[in-house]
Amino acid sequence: MEGSRLKVAVLYNLLERLEKGEAKDILAEEGILEEIGAVQEGIRCLGHEVFVMAIRNEIETVIQWLKRIQPDIVFNLCESVYGDACMEMNVPALLDLFRIPYTGSSPLTLGLCQDKGKVKDILSSQGILTPRYKVFDREAGSLRGNIFPIIVKPLHEDGSLGISKESVVYDDEALNRQIRYVIEKYRQPALVEEYIEGRELNVGLLETNGKLKVLPVSEIDYSEFPGGVPRICGYEAKWVPESIEYQKSKPICPAPLEWVMQRRVEHAGVKAFKLFGCRDYARVDMRIDRDGKIYVLEVNPNPDISPDSGMARAIRVQGMTYAEFVGTVLEKALQRKDGERINAK
Image (cartoon, one colour):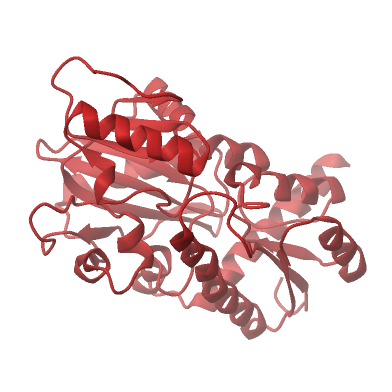
């Protein structure tokens, strides 16, 4: 890629009107604009020509735009289409049909990881510890056994949508209330998951120089949370600066981990990345309980890479500039396309 000036198209999703969820969820949609600006500037710093297009409420304009621009590569930052996170996989599928190389994971990986229940099934099948769970498309009634506290999440959303301090529940009444909330507000089943008390880690991974590199592990420190507020990275902690959760959740990177635990965490991240066929970069979220057991919570093959994100923070701690990160991702995607051409001969 060195010395060649590329035409790079940046695709992202922008929803002007929410079809489901809470009115405040639009903050997460708007947050992508900072991500777009950073990627756009990184591409320019590399000396490439950059074009930016938002997928809004139709796709025909995007198709015509791609035909007209004829980009050498697409930097794919789409996390949903028409406000539906389950359609995220359709954007790279479209690019595959047009034979346009793009950054990030394949449609299969993106679609699979969008179903948190299936992710946990696959993790468990390969001996990777993950919190126990069940999916509900109606109220649970009364659950047996000493299972509380548990956390209730939408099955298909990203960015902590639908997750708040009310999501951690301690009795059947609260459990059924949250299941009802997810089904009615987010129009999808609810994932009811064992709540793991302990340290929360974000493990960023980046493919570079032919190797999969684990970036410096980041920890979310909840020690300053007031009593009664669950120690989780809910929607407020992620998107609402005036909230107590946002102000009191402190990122620490690199996380202070003892050497053996560091290796175990890195191994779990690499194993999850490879298991789901992630490409270029990804983030694996984990918790370590009081007994030192590592639980993989989620695998995110299309994580937030805005300048204030945990992924960008880990990149900086690694010693890379943002432009170098963007260049590494573009290079990997182009190598993949070149490899496909060679194999097809």
